[in-house]
Length: 212
Image (cartoon, rainbow, N blue to C red; front, side):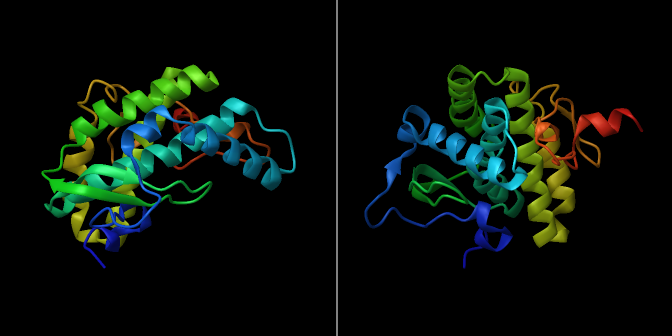
């Protein structure tokens, strides 16, 4: 098991692109896979809540998972001070943590991932599913800080590094103004999970924080 994999499944990346079924990252950003994840999220949420769920809420929840999966390996590499995956490839998986593999490895650059991967994906989800840009940017921020939290749960000694990485993430233009680094981190928009019957609020939600 690699050092990244020890942080959790969202950080796991195959060392090389071997075998069949792998697609270059551009096909994830431009192809139907994000829409498949939205449909799958909608079905799961409707089944769990036994009620109708707004399509934009399903798109929001799906985006959180997509962002977290694509951000976590680079965030983990920054925390561990190791090379990050580059030339990412992916395999389609309708739900859960979809596999990633690296065609190369190099210095971790979270700002590049935000600009080149997360922002284009957010624009795609906004255009296809009508989810607001503010919610999507907040979801990207929440996904980044969720990855930091997961990493520090696995490695408590990384907490100081996580504060630095989180603060730096919020300096990226796409994430600027999306949250307060804390600790604890609190986002400034809502992912809409509360709109699912019985959903409640997430741990970093702005709504209960406003009432404190």
